[in-house]
Length: 568
Ligand code: HAS
Image (cartoon, rainbow, N blue to C red; front, side, top):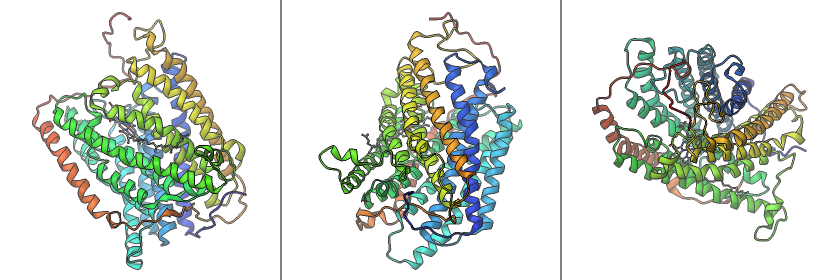
């Protein structure tokens, strides 16, 4: 029997429909995004040519891969999951007119951006920093997605305030705290992004101004870009803290650890973006160092999470009969078909050990010089966003589909293996890219030139690990994704076995601490704003005062002759 918490909530059919479409639409797009992931590794290894990209150019495929997987899928999922959490825990109906408005903006924006990527007018990668220039529809489309997500968040505030009024002195449910922190971080982060697109990129893209201030645009982008990664991670942490302990058979070791983790991420997610710009001119080393220091502080809640999750799983495993110093690990439900969501969470935690450690390497100011812009970077971010984040998102998407439609999972035996096959793939893929990265292999290739083809002027013998391991790992990841898609769509098109309802797994706390410091957003939000001013005002002023020449647009897929020199 499918593991169930039996706390199903009957919800408005409109909301149910909207959450379902908000999950199905990006999962359908994900098939394209994943396909182009496979194309990347095969192309880098010289096994295929650009003509095999389904008619897309290399950078065009890479843009589609990054935008769909990292921006569209994640934002839609965060909104859908946010609706589920807010409705489930706060128990109040939501304003459906506002909800559909948010939905329409997000879908309309996505289609606009997708159209120009597919027609080759927005080959700018997911970071879209100039001088790569896209068609205005790309920036406008992404802006609509962001505005749509803001509107969804604003829609959750009235039920939250009503719940607070009716429950004075009660702790806000932990999952709601996590989701609100996710969207507060998102709101803060997307304001500079809006400034970048509205004042710099759109006028330049329309042709109103001939050039753009690249260092300023990049600083505004990374002000957004780093909190973006915690916007991805926070819903995953909501699932880990509130669901994983129960799935493991036990309780959440500490409710306080969860609240502190969320609020600490609110404090430190933003004033760290310059760690993506350690090698860039125009920012003094003082401010680079300050943000490197803050980056170390933003890792602390993840260490707390590692400890809390291990302790919670130990509690569950011992409750299931586990014993001994390490023997209890054997009692976790790794392959339990009914508690299958555990496998998605556990595999993600495992991958994140390596993603986290390599993040600390990136953040170490001097070591960053070795790895920056090398293939080490895609290895790091696949072990974070394509590890814990991706696995928890696809797992929860499947979970919500089954609960909301009342359908049984098809292919339970295959489903439980998906995260482990994905983990095998990602570990092999990343090992290749890490080795290539420390050997200096650039993170991207250009103009159809392979690093691993001896005929190519970019050939480098140290980078063959990335070819073999990268393409092998990437293929294994694609196989895992393929199984997932089959399970997902077979389940979706199956017959319902019961009335669908909104159901989430709820873990009880083992230590239910009452600590006033983590009961309110206000001081943490004030602290976050203060740290942003301290960390960003001086470098921003430096950038504004420096007179950088404006840059004309550049397209990576147009054949500009490069002086590559003789092969080494
Ligand atoms: Fe990062 C670049 C630093 C976390 C994503 N990062 C990126 C990029 C992306 C990304 C997408 O300082 C590339 C952007 C681009 O396109 O250029 N990152 C960090 C640090 C952390 C970190 C310090 N990153 C993430 C997360 C991401 C993400 C999370 C997505 C979700 N990152 C950087 C830096 C760069 C960077 C530099 C720029 C580099 C450059 O030069 O361009 C930390 O938050 C990591 C803390 C995490 C831990 C791990 C805790 C472990 C846990 C698992 C426990 C396991 C258990 C199971 C209990 C300390 C929670 C046990 C089971 C057993 C079997 C033993």
